[in-house]
Length: 164
Length: 391
Image (cartoon, rainbow over the protein chains, first blue to last red):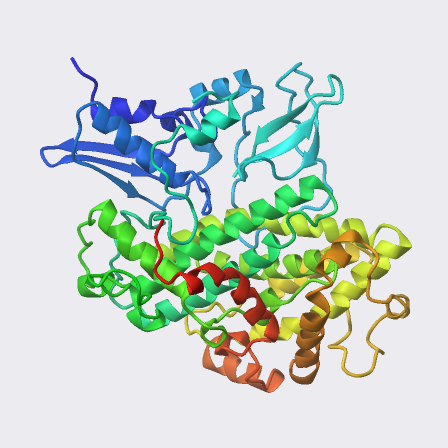
């Protein structure tokens, strides 16, 4: 039996973190298939994520290759994507690729978003040697969704997917 | 695609849409229902989306100008990422503005295809029932024209961004001071728009709050690092805050009825928190002709001209900065932090604001410094020379 549209869409990889499928990343919110065709609903990771257009095109291409001709990719902005939507499988793949997966995103409390200056941040383990602590080198990295860190033991720099 | 092969990763796509003028990059709202809910004033929504979108677009451009000029590579990466987030917010907001009302958008460029519809498709679908999502291709063409027409087809007087975002930065301290104020203000404002009546504006705001939290943190850490650093970095950070202060009064002049009115206490508290940690003095009031408001140590700090970043920007910065400062000194009095300018909100608060800032010199009204025209000359150069061009 040939794969369903949902199964095909789930195998498409992220253009900037190709070790992850879109399903691993949690950006595919819904895949609906009826007589009229296939409707895939995606949620962008960041407002300015330049990969979104590639992602839409990749979904259409993968589904067309599997015989689904009438494909529509819709964008759903709400609820906003959170790093909590990265699946356990996705986190394992990030670690295997030397990228530290995100911890739980900060819970939003009532009142203004607090600004934390200089407080010690949560411990983030080195994905190379497993040392439980690391230091931040830069708050942003090759993509908006990652920061740059360094392990004090093995001295290797590594990327960490930010909690958002 | 191989994760280890950067060249392959960049070249193995058979589509060539790229995020640039005329390259057919898709509508950022592709497939999002364009309906405007009943009870939402389309013109007001369009105007306010335009204001918030222009703020993000022009601030993004100023940040982009720092790429290759920042003190360290990591900061260029950070600044580029912040600029990218803001550009993404701008695209969504300008697209929404064009959907809400055709009146905010200039006509499509003359050279585009004769069959081109007006940049706004949504006006005919204004019912309360969700519109059936049109095809992604259809959305892409109308949406892209909407945002492109707004970004590349308007002159300075049609831009609604606050003057704060167009200001050129004399040095890196000026940049982080301005970014701190901008991110703190925008975060407080958008946080209050998360439950606004228009679902698209609410969704954009909800997403942007998360991003701006990182932007504010980045700027705040730099202000503290410079302010609480060496004598030289401290005096330059103090000078940057002194120069920033007169520009903050404009933020209270918010003509849109959709604009939140209660952001000031949060803004003031965050800036006080950062400046205290940075050991930088809050300017007592807008520095008028007298330099009495500036602490003694900063009055001795000549405009910085020694750093590489500074020198690199010096071709355009001095005139633009002095023009902004002149305008600010003449027309933006009373930017002291502690008082809450806006009392209860609504018309009364707005009237009170006019007493504090009796100016028509706001970017919100289309009044800009010469710096904006310089930015647009650069940003719109290609679109002006090849109107409606596609490649």
